[in-house]
Length: 108
Image 1 (tube, rainbow, N blue to C red):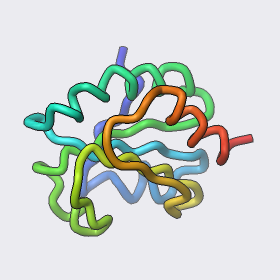
Image 2: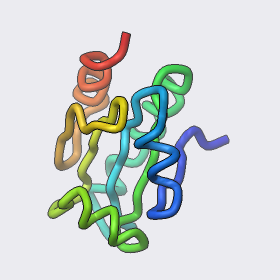
Image 3: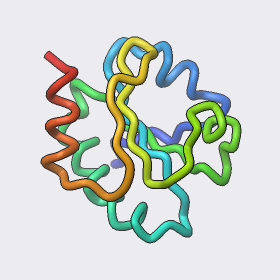
């Protein structure tokens, strides 16, 4: 079972901007080596925080409008949204601990 949501230009507004809980969004691409390295960590975060945080993935190649809207220039880019606002973000491969700290600053 996947705990991650596939985010697209079509469902981003509903799943992220209107979400009542924080949403961790991973902007990635299939050809991106660092994105593939980060994927298992994102999956673990999604599973562990499934009751408090939504975790979604945006394929930047398939969703160019979102990439442009959020000025994605480097991937992987991780953004944390709360109440429709970006409250934190990081670029590049991050440790699980770094992402957990990022989340813990904004929940609870």
